[in-house]
Image (cartoon, rainbow, N blue to C red; front, top):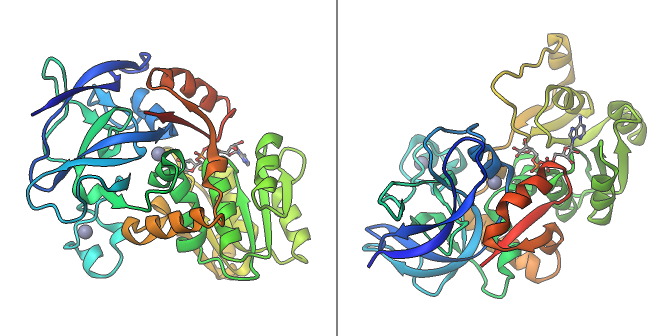
Length: 361
Ligand code: APR
Ligand code: ZN
Ligand code: ZN
């Protein structure tokens, strides 16, 4: 039986979002209905509301979520009712060229639920990133559910569904940070701070946090950065070189998504170092570099897509580390809010007041 629940809907460009009644169908083949327990507020939700991602309104927002599987459709083997799961927006197919070559994080045939959730009048909803979890219940593809240890706090676990995983994975997966490395992280919002934590987990000896906001630098220092650089006051490339005997960092992670910080990341790395770009640029951004600097510096320039994560491998492992007090996911939860406070949370996010606001249901 389809069920009516409450969800946060964005009906038109820039209009405030509101809690509305939505209809969640029974799970079809390969699908699962999840009772959402927590869902973080991410910049991407705001971009949906602002029309920056698609114009297929109305959207059901929310995508950084954890909850309990309520029911599954035919043929579902990944999860069963009662499982505690973290949702992800890249359920890989296992069949495409990227999957077959062992790089499923580049899968181009990711899938979501086939049936639509709707408004009460039957209008189909577009769920944010194929999830739509600012809702009491949501319908997803079973492959979007990863079972993790149920002792984890839902607010913390859900964060692995997007930004925090992107930052952790930039350090652990894409950057391949190793024991004793020097790592610089440019931009210490939710993603960059997670990259700091990832670098620490990997055993980096020095972690240099760069930001233009002293509050962010204080948080980064509390969570593992050994040095901080306020790039309004100091040229970060010079500061990083000075801290590394003139060489630069082994791994530099850019977590802003702007040409000037991409440039800083490029020049702040050691000769054989790795630059990881995890900040997402806008379509109009370009970066011009002298080719001789590219040629002459060696090393690697990599982009990191959702932290190059593999949910089935990474989520349970990171939750285990969290439960062993080796990964402080709780530190990202700046505040917990109710479903009808998402609009206000967008405002606080916009002003950089929070790492993450998390809706508890
Ligand atoms: N130099 C250094 N830091 C900067 C600069 C700059 N020129 N401009 C902004 N910042 C800092 C901000 O002060 C903030 O702390 O970058 C941080 C960005 O953080 P958030 O706005 O919280 O964004 P976050 O969720 O961390 O995402 C960062 O990664 O995955 C991508 O799409 C995401 O592009 C975005 C980036
Ligand atoms: Zn695939
Ligand atoms: Zn997100």
